[in-house]
Length: 93
Image 1 (cartoon, one colour):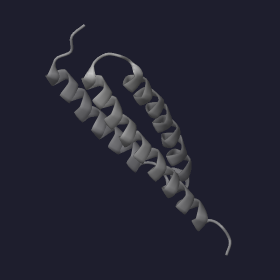
Image 2 (cartoon, helix red, strand yellow):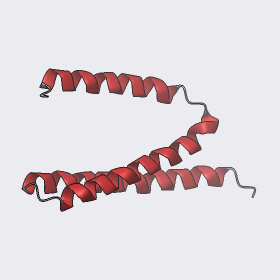
Image 3 (spheres, one colour):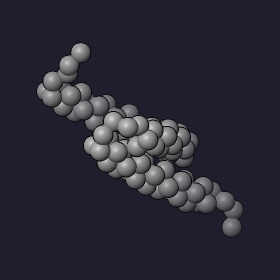
Image 4 (cartoon, one colour):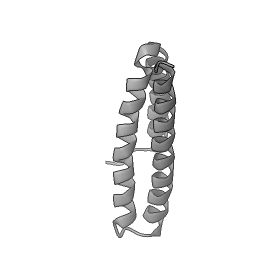
């Protein structure tokens, strides 16, 4: 099944709007658990990126896998730093 570029762009634009609507409606008390959940999903993306690097499907897949690995790692580390900082706000002094 071949998907054309117009369909892919349409799906991407719809995902941006739906994601924006969902995230804007999250109450502040749920931001920390939501961040932890997104870190878990990014951890899965790290595993997928490592698999993409290890599969012998050509140089392009290795470069795309490396880029995905770098981006997902930055996302996980940044997410944990933000979560840690948010949790420190609730600790008693």
